[in-house]
Picture (cartoon, rainbow, N blue to C red):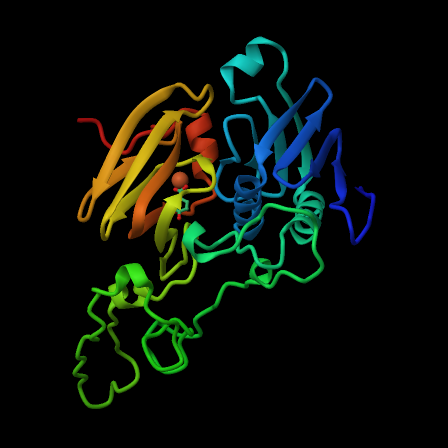
Length: 319
Ligand code: PHB
Ligand code: FE
């Protein structure tokens, strides 16, 4: 339900027994036992990803209190459920909704609450503020659609990120990334069928942060490179093992217990490092300058249930 519709004031939204409102600095989330407050820029960056990723794999924690769990068809919205202190004080609450219902409310919230000049996908140095009174104007950044390559990157008719005159400019932080493309020599008869491209050059032109794109699919194996800067806007509680390959620069990961939030590890990944994130943790990355990360996902829909039943382990390797 959407209340207080007005062009002067931010709207209040109701989803089941949750109520959401914003003012100049904060988002307020109310449920039967309590109310939670979050900085509005942090809330909008998390909301944008939750919506754009279709609620992602497993749990999307907006912070240590509020978030969503994807059941692939329905979505659980929770407050305090994965926070040991809220659980101990009986302040935890959750409710499940059809994916369409929550998607609709979250989309309206993004539209009403995101100022025209604030891009939730941009690094903080590349966008204006999320703070302040409601102003007229439509936000184009939140309407950004995934650019679907018609063919493999670098082939004729590929996506717009390619390194030609129509592509995006190289990001300031990646000015040192060589832009030369590999030379491909094809046997006669195979022209237009075989290609290679410079992934570093491709990523150096990405204009979003913390938004994995899929560049290769082989059965359930998804290669999702991405460019990162500042803080991953969600604390991701995965429902499967996930691999990270640090392609450039450095990301520091805080790793916590998925259920309670108790700290488990701090992982500093430098260029060339590879890590597997277990399926029983939540993690949040900090990237001091723009960096390139390859996220490798196993998209098999069987995995969450196999893990719940204890048929596959939560970690990929035992040393
Ligand atoms: C993750 O939760 O594993 C994740 C999400 C977005 C990224 C990188 C990693 O850009
Ligand atoms: Fe993750």
